[in-house]
Image 1: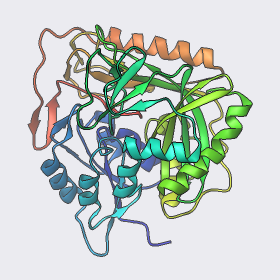
Image 2: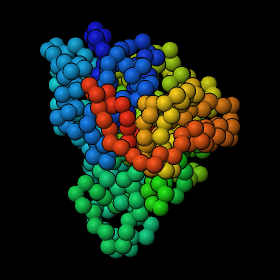
Image 3: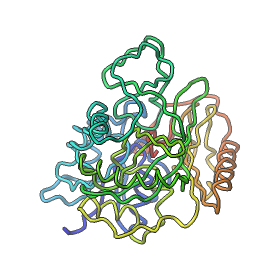
Image 4: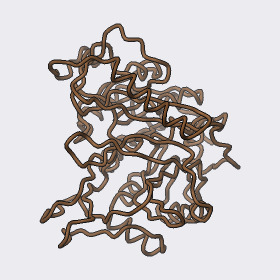
Length: 402
């Protein structure tokens, strides 16, 4: 294996989880993201807050400039590149970032294939893998159908299909599927997959909307044995067909002994927060190794039930300048940040001996955070000083992984 890079450039809408995973694995990380959270700053060797927003993602020119400042391109490459959410629909931007850096993740071509619904669902059909019906034209009867964005992440782009609504470029229709939403976290080396575990997901719809905005995850999910047996060979087939490497996740709906595949997220996500205590190398190290073709012989997994949940602002909120965050809060906004209604505030984590206990703890911690943040009369735009935002009008990551 080639020498370890000087540092890894982490690019994600929110880079905290990857920066923390890099630190746990004993590696250095520099981060380009949208937020510059307090804990991300503490974990990274350097950070740049990039222009952009959760709806449209990064400003391309600003991100390319930030990457060059943090981890200059070189030949041979001196820095690694590990990316999270925010590039699923932008393979050309990923290709630019990978120039002069060692890409540790799926190639732009693999990302494009995986997030192209026509290619992906055609592949599922060829492999005999069940999935909900998909249409690229508006169904005559929209009841029971969802409208999705190709390459979208975080669930906020998913909504019920309205009567007469047509699929614009980059959108498609998918029929609702019964059951529980389950995420399968796995490592891949281009030939086969190693399942890390399964998590049950839940949504957090914004007030007055029917969106499927991502809420949180809990593992283990508890699957029927027949479904659990079918997952490894299914993943092996998809890994070989798509050329997947590193950390990925598969989203599906599971109802008793049946399942239906929804999509693959071809990058690390929220699984880092709930799975990353099962191996001394850490998931960041295993991700890097898997991208080089090496999978561990086995995976022990977390020893307890773990869960995470995104806390969204139910109204405009402000972070007190003297607030002391509990240890179980991650993605901590800067002191004085003002957070607009509906935007993420932070992430809360829990580890308990049972699923019921973990759910109770997560609910209590969400309530605790909201009670600690007073209402803000107004919201303000981000103001930057030397690339470090002193106040924020929005927060968080809009991805599955969120």
